[in-house]
Length: 301
Length: 301
Image (tube, rainbow over all chains, first blue to last red; front, top):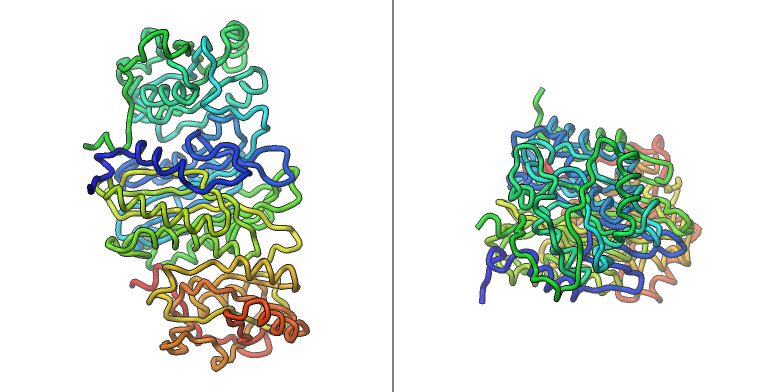
């Protein structure tokens, strides 16, 4: 049976492969959450690891602004750090690019990578380059830390937790996907002040990502569509399925609701925080199926 | 002035860009050595970081053995760990691959990645996948540790140090480049028993790599061509410039020579160790220019 990746789908294939791979006693959480979490000998803090890539023709256009491509390539990985309330510290760059490409493009790319790194005091400690006959690929690997009691997985959601999202959803492709700032400051503030049960960043769209958080927490969810923070000019459907929002989705006890909403407004007056629904036991209400987000290989069928 | 990467050359471009990038106080050695070396809060050991990639059409052929591609993709990064006497512990995989490709190919690729990881008890803790319209790209990021007093840089070579290489050089493309084992065990043994001053792995060929070690140590080198451990069926020129040997090149005091050669034969009876020359002050003899190795972008002009 010779199936293509399109037919099987990326998520299903990796879900089959990744659990079979070699692990060791130092792994807290391997593939499957926003970052990997591991223990490093002698350190009290956990080590967070994440690799992510942008590909010409998929995530950016060849004639596009190279500085913006670099910014995005770095910020995508940092958004995964935000999702776990992690502190990024080091980054490695791998650039696969044809020798005929312009030196100026590479300089601008690195300018964007470096600007994004400086924003969070991250050191870029490696830069590998390889030739290719095909599209440019930029891979960013980020290494950082998190206090064990502030590391937020997707799997910690509890029944009756409120679900919150930051910012607005939908329409990111028009501009925001190239100049967003990872929600690291917000995530760190949240875990310094509240007991966040589960968190992730919205990269594939609420419709794809929320079911992942609920599934990891072995719960179902209920969403009030009218409560979704829809970007200006977008429909609810776009807010659910556009993707690349890079906002935070998180679950906290409803006992914290009032204090969270009040303190958030004071701390981040320019950034919205919206309660969009709640988690509940699977049996209670049938799993909502109207949510359908961006799924990599399937999208292009 | 619109120069292409071919015209400028990968090494020169990165040599210009990388020193300008954001660093921070926790960086021991950033880009420029085989791995990056950084400090992680509370840990006595240093953290080693390395990303590396293999690209279809450049490092492997589309119809090739996917398991061997995976093995090679992992072992290349591990060879950089050997170069610093590091202990690899965790790996992240980023796979950029067209949706039309076969699921079986990806499974075999991961089988090879996992076999190489298991060889050194490394946990694969992340697997990102992206679509592409172009050739397959496999990026492996490896994270591990090294004791500060056993971390060997390229820059520590001293005048009159002997230069040694392990194994044989040249002709790797015929087979060895797909099934080699990174010299981690050998490197760990060396630093447990000897004061190694400088070390690196031979990936671009002795002719490209030895000048890098000498330059980093601010020294010149002298090589006895007749002493080179040339692979069967290869010329001296091939041993110098073929590349992908993944052997160790290192500098130790000549006072350790006899003990090293004697102990090595006993410990690794099947693996050769050859003294090929020595380091010396730059003024003494003119820098040898006959050595010319594999240089990525230039090779294809």
